[in-house]
Image 1 (cartoon, rainbow, N blue to C red):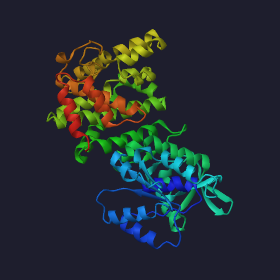
Image 2 (cartoon, rainbow, N blue to C red):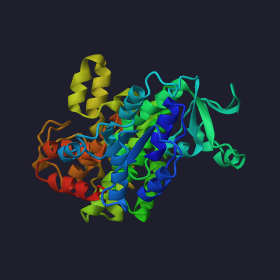
Image 3 (spheres, rainbow, N blue to C red):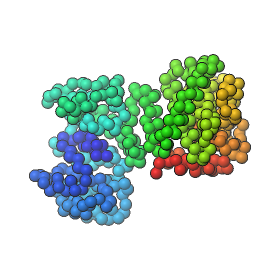
Image 4 (tube, one colour):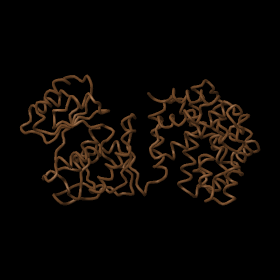
Length: 440
């Protein structure tokens, strides 16, 4: 969080921002300052060492400096406690960095502190939590002279930060427009950042590859779903093995050739296949249903279930019958037929060409668009007619569509949708399993 605040303040203001990691160090620093700081931002931590001393110091000096106290939620007792401290402001972390931007603009309006120069600096260390800027980066070599060291078509993962740090360079520079764009991207993802571990903000630009846009979403799965490392590796090996078998089949080759010609749809197909394999196997393990046969069955179904849609890659983005009905009038009769028949067509592929697939794999594929209330397709089965493993695979498929196509997916949001959508026999235990694998 400190890195975010520092970047925002150094973008907006001509100022030096000092980061201090504890109340003890902050108290010592403030008491030894020769002049009063312009602003203090305190990330409040209950029961911290020297908390009372630090809060007491802030109150004693609140008439001299604006003090922003960050909290996870603004509560009435907090507002009551600070009602007479007019220079002290409570700020909800979830409103960052936008609320800090507005507070800073208001506080320093008309002052020489406001920074309106063409370039803004960014701490090299801050780049570690940004998943690629894909914008021009500069170093400063004089009062008004900047040299571009990184082009917007490059990827920051290949930027050798240690080389620059060894030369004493701790800051790069961005154009002001780019810096404000980064702040906006952070704002859009702050809720996930506050909940996740080791989260990296993905900075999405118009020129980003589809692979990059999906990559960060897959990283979020690691933050939100507990998966044993060895088990995850066994799933990945199964996917690699079964995908190789499927891709060698001549009947499938024509489907994949069309798909590979479209980068975006190929990325969606690949990531959905991987994510459905992962989630279905994780749920099966949580339910004590996992075995080599079950894993192979779930992975085969994940790889093949949508493969016949590859002839019309845009159909891959339609997650269910409800969405199909919404866009139906934009599709040709042939495309409508391809979409509605793809569960049956893919199931037939399994039966006819993939004898290495475990028994009943075709049933998983045939039923992957069914829904427990009977509103799915192609058979309109109700919950009692859907097998337990098919119910699991349906939920895993739904999860993958949601995570890859929603702008800001979270496990909590998906679970909320599930409680009404899947409150049926055979499905309830799957949703309970999903709740258990969610990281606390």
